[in-house]
Amino acid sequence: MDWLLQNGPHTPYIAVINSSFFNVNTLTKLQKSRKVNGLILISSDGEPGPELGFSPDQSCPNRGHGLYDSESFVDGCKVDWNPYGEAMFFKDWSFPMFLVREQSDIHSLLETCYAKFNAPIDGNARSWPLCAAELLSNMFAARDAETCIRRSNMVTNLNPVKVCDPLGDYNIWAPLFSMNKSEPVQNRSLVFVTARHDAFSMFDNFVPGGDSSVTGLVTLLAVSTALSKVAQDMKFNGKNVVFVIFNGEAFDYIGSSRIVYDMQQNVFPNHLDGGIASQPPLISLSHISHFIELNQVGISGPNPVLWAHTDPLSTKNSAVNSTVQQLISTLQKQRLLNKFIVQPSSAENPLPPSSFQSFLKGDLEIPGLVLTDHDGSYSNKYYNSFFDVLKLNSSDSSLSVVEYVHSTATVVLRTVYELVTGQTRELEPSKKLIADLLTCYSTGRNCSVVRRPTVKLQSDKLSKLRLPNMYVGVDFSMSEMSGITTNLFSYLVGTELSGVGIGDCHNPNDNTIFTYRWIPINESTSVCVKSMVNVTRAVSPAFDIPDYDYSSARYSTWTESVWDEHSLRIFLKPSVRQEVATLCIGIAILLVSFVVVWFLNKNSDILFPSNGMGPSTGSISTSVVAASC
Image (cartoon, rainbow, N blue to C red; front, side, top):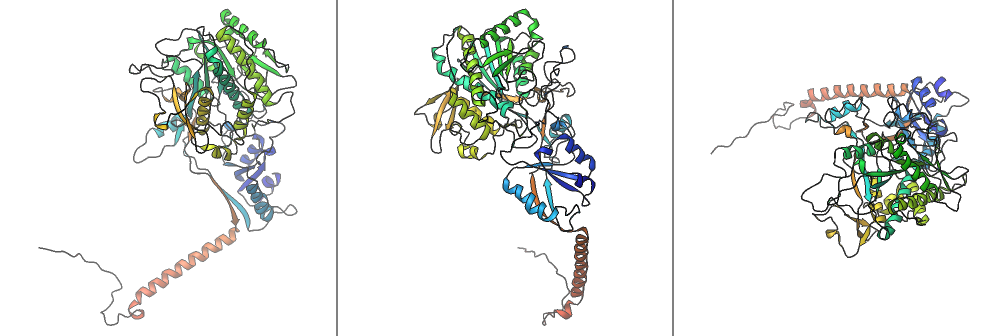
């Protein structure tokens, strides 16, 4: 890189670097040099991340959008949660960046292109021709979200192209027991068990979200599956469990803030319709008795510990604090054979970045915990990066990822069962299911579970994905992985309806408590699945509130630019002298052609005699033929 910045004579360059050089310091040097107008990062499939860690997120993710602000007297970033975060994602880079992972493409770049034509010889630059690259990554977005949305909403015949879309997707939720609006929900009667679905990275379609989101998601699916199998045997004592999978949390809590907003507007999960007899009741913040968030729960240290984080603001209320301490005690008494323990985090520390903060912003009287694999700083060195891929067979910790997630799911499963029934029971989720789910979400291949419930993608398409893409997407459409998760969730907790065809697999007009989904289970067979899994919009309220103040930072205002199709091509580029010579020759040929055409036209009577058909005028005339009756 020093040679390129100091000695390279053939500017502008496109820098090709490996992952060890991909950091803010390197990119800043390239940008300040003004000798680089593009970057290609080569990182082959399966290549481990930098040993020192890498995260393009901030050191305090979602800073400024959580529970803690200047008026709360609690510093939400008191703990350096993400010490590997360089905030690369939040900086304005003046050149496009492409990630190349295919080994054949890497060979073409390094060997066929660079080594053969461009590599310096004894420190001296090669002569022409040189291998060049073209990176096309055209974005249409305006300078900020407010300007961008305003311009997109001013679509006319003169300006038919939108320039950006709000980030968004769908939240996925399901109760354990059916609920009907005919029986309104009682205050403090719902146990919320939640996880997030999304993550992000610097590169489109490479968002694995390993420990960032997948471990908590798989834990929730395992717990809900195990509870659904014993739900009919559970003694109902007025409490219910609501499982929620939030989308858009990596972008300032889009999903959780939307659900809180809808609860405050009395429209969650949906508006009540007098024409529908059976419909889920309205759920509000006051209905939540316990909140258990499954955050990053996949990386075990030397001692397998699950950390329970509490909020220092809400626990100032003695009633809330008492409930929280009872919840911690219930978690801690679930003894496992592998010495897995639950440990409360320091009461002085704030909550880590979590969806629970959105709910506490709406109601500080909600007792709850955030469960993680870290006490202070993240155990995950690759938070929200394309390196955040789970190492399922890793032996560098006391428990494998599968064992750690299984232990977490077991503790949460037994705790939730006791909260709902008041009884203890030695329940255990399926370790095979957890292993299959982790394999599905971390590799996309050899996926025996997700091969069944897909959204008409069929298993072969999912298996062709290099990595499942956990990016949230944009409003008005459900992302590919959200669709898979919704159908998978439905399949795991729902009931297969035998003998029901695709034409009859739908909700009755007078009942929206249950949903019916036609789910392919192999290449030739599909089944109708009845479940209570439903979805709600996960779009920031900022885009629905008239005249919203974008400077308030109350809600997320992330948008995604509309773009042209990305492309990268390499080719041989001649010297400037040769290009100029080619241009001059072309201009000379053009001028000569003008002279030749003029000469031929002027002497056409001589060169092209008319053979007695009359003199030629050298032009074409037209007449209008008219008919009259």
